Length: 129
Image (cartoon, rainbow, N blue to C red; front, top):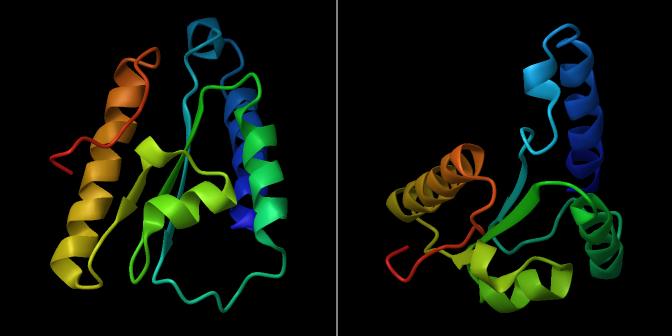
């Protein structure tokens, strides 16, 4: 998760450099950054702890149009996500099966599209999700 979060900022900078001469796209508020962490509840790759991820998410949110999503199976993703620094309204628990996982990703994609179209509207999963 840390590596991907770190690459997000450099990817945005690279994209902006490629837009030289297209000032409208560089205008403040036009870039929306999304980060999604999807897990089955088994942590078999992390080299850092929850507090470190929380700090990285706080750093990424400062002064940017940034949203972090936490999708978790085999756990209470809202409680777990909160411990990692994710907001409750952008965290979702899903059943570990193909259909449920697919639906969770589709719901997240829908919110990401809405954020791109209307960045001023706060992102959140609904009760229907």
